[in-house]
Amino acid sequence: MLLASREKEFICRKCGYVISIRHKAGLFCPKCGTILREKPKEKYWLFQFNPKIYRWHERIKETHSPERWLVSRYWKKISKGDAVILWSSGLEAGVCAFGKVITDPEIVELSVDEIKFWIDKSIIDKFKQKKSVLVEYLKVLDKPLSEEQCHSDPELCGLGVFLNPQGTNFRLKPVEWDRIVDLTCNL
Ligand SMILES: [Zn+2]
Image (cartoon, rainbow, N blue to C red; front, side, top):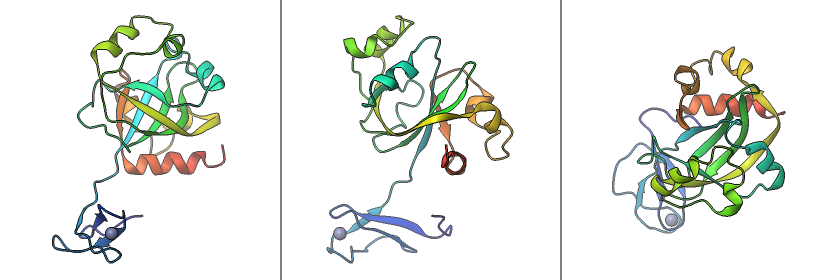
């Protein structure tokens, strides 16, 4: 939902009620009377994997359980509740899945079950040194939204992954998220 620029969203920290109002402080939840606080803006990310070094497709055939992702570049910005689009590089590049970050960044070593999907074993040490998050998959696309489709779309041609394709974590604008959702609702 697009809000007028002066309107902000507030949330009740007790019951979770969300209200959009043109006001700053001193407002109370109409449901339970608890003081409201400003609702944090939703954050969107694109996480990229390279199928030459990580067998993501094999893993997702085996399990849809939450998956651990390094958050090297934006570990101070990424947090629990953020929305994620999963992007494959390589020959069949494009959007593969939608997910949600379900933990705050922390250093967690990969388990044996997680290690087996890494072709490039040097990555295993990175998980010992750098923070990572768990991503729960909300939707896995049977047919990816291809890189070509994104590239030729006026809303998506400026994706961070096109401008500087190195790395795992990229910022995604809310309009880019919305556009990808629109383009994939029938995939
Ligand atoms: Zn409330």
